[in-house]
Length: 384
Ligand SMILES: *[C@@H]1O[C@H](CO)[C@@H](O)[C@H](O)[C@H]1NC(C)=O
Ligand SMILES: *[C@@H]1O[C@H](CO)[C@@H](O)[C@H](O)[C@H]1NC(C)=O
Ligand SMILES: *[C@@H]1O[C@H](CO)[C@@H](O)[C@H](O)[C@H]1NC(C)=O
Ligand SMILES: *[C@@H]1O[C@H](CO)[C@@H](O)[C@H](O)[C@H]1NC(C)=O
Ligand SMILES: *[C@@H]1O[C@H](CO)[C@@H](O)[C@H](O)[C@H]1NC(C)=O
Ligand SMILES: *[C@@H]1O[C@H](CO)[C@@H](O)[C@H](O)[C@H]1NC(C)=O
Image (cartoon, rainbow, N blue to C red; front, side, top):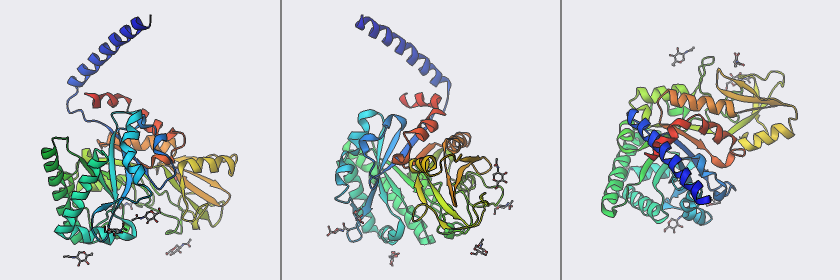
């Protein structure tokens, strides 16, 4: 009985597969739609709790750059997590691709740029990055946090990407393994936006794709008015928004098909000057709830339910943001509506997929399921 059922099932599977194959042949230029997510080792969220079936790519961050040797370095407290990451995430989904992310930003950005402008430093870093990726069986490498501040930075970043690609290709040839993927996150940086850019030609030529860090545009520590930190559009105040950034990168020559849209699984709380004046643009006096106002999605949901008993988050589709006022706290974040609208946008614009930051902040996978459901049809493409 059991055997017969299996037989029938396998016939059904074959028929299904055949029809999918023929669908694909009719559909030229099929690309795999990327559903990526960062896991941050500083988070207490265990890797084994990640539902890998909801992702095509999982990125473990962050390794660091040693400021004296310029080699990739992993903190001893997170060594174990990095070394087992690939194995653990592939248990639930053997097809998921694992990347190792290197942090090149924050207050230590000068370490990255003094690495980038010296050929011997670049060589140390590149060699150690490939060795570490292979040692822990990662399928690729990602650079996060790098923001060029000067045109010299732009040039040296471009040179570095040329060398990184050449080294990865040559290692693949020598080892006979499939080559490591190379990706990088592009961030927003108000002060340098107009004068300094990323090396678009080099990115286009050398990287498999670029992640757009499409969040943290407006922070409660920096502004005295409320504003969505990750607005998709902003026709009213003409502030920084994702649609303008995507269009800007495309106009500078980055193909849409090399761009993966970042989705924030966090929001920010602002303290309102006058709680009844609580729209976008209301006067604010700094962060609320946490020291810098940042809140994980799952914490926001908990906060609204318990502290803001009865509060109903609004969705504003002009900006594509959810927000909620609880007492004098104004909390803006991406709930299911905003996430769905952004994934639809990514499809409409012909982008390569999306990348969430970060998986451990989801609330029972509500956002990841909402994002993944919109693209059911293209899920099949990657198996062919
Ligand atoms: C950098 O590498 C040097 C030499 O291996 C080591 O002594 C030092 O502790 C490392 N620094 C950090 C911050 O890991
Ligand atoms: C290692 O981790 C500790 C604790 O999280 C942190 O304070 C330290 O800066 C980390 N070291 C490096 C080199 O990243
Ligand atoms: C490289 O960058 C560092 C830090 O920005 C700087 O101090 C150094 O002079 C630069 N070196 C070269 C060769 O440009
Ligand atoms: C918004 O900014 C863009 C670029 O700076 C400009 O071309 C456009 O006219 C502005 N729109 C409004 C409504 O201010
Ligand atoms: C916010 O700051 C700007 C300049 O930093 C100032 O012109 C403006 O009056 C401030 N607004 C409020 C509501 O405090
Ligand atoms: C969204 O917010 C803007 C600015 O506060 C407002 O003009 C607009 O009416 C809002 N839209 C919705 C659907 O609430």
